[in-house]
Image 1 (cartoon, rainbow, N blue to C red):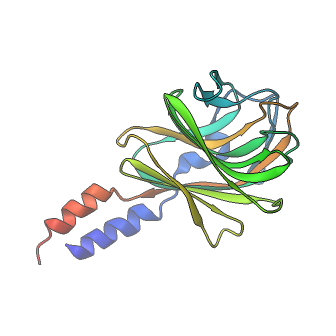
Image 2 (cartoon, rainbow, N blue to C red; image 1 turned 90 degrees about the vertical axis):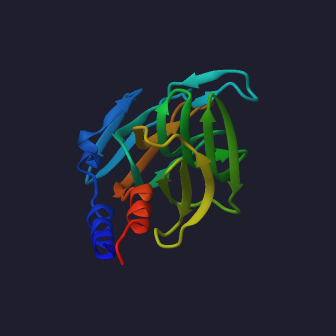
Image 3 (cartoon, rainbow, N blue to C red; image 1 turned 90 degrees about the horizontal axis):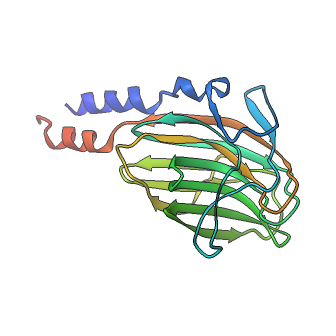
Length: 217
């Protein structure tokens, strides 16, 4: 039985989902300018657009560009992000979204002249956490791992060493939209490029635990 478990993991864990092909993904709030070339997506982020719900500021906005595909179950997603950030709150990153009241966005956000690793978690109302960087960075990798009812968010500057920046609740057994987003609440837009976007299935943790407990020695 243990051999069967390992075989199941090997088959499911390394399979990239075909729907992650950029040409097959979908727009929510499509921007006026965007292009797919050499497996990368470039876009000019829509001016005066953002994702935020209620808390602290007292308003709700849900109008920034988001390019996504929908997935079920457990998975690992990652993407490389390079942006020409210009004004306060310019941001680009990965988004995981169930609906307008339940989503996570994580990436780089430009605030008061500094680059920040930023995560917004929204469940009816939004919260915001940041890790200030000492100096600008040319790019960042963001990785999200969905396991059961949690999503772990990691960052890297070389796609080798990843550091966790957030662990957040998200309902499990619920389809979720996974993709890339950019927002420009205060400015007139900026250019951003997303490269090497990929999503890999992970074997269902509960099923593997059940198989392990019920395996014949």
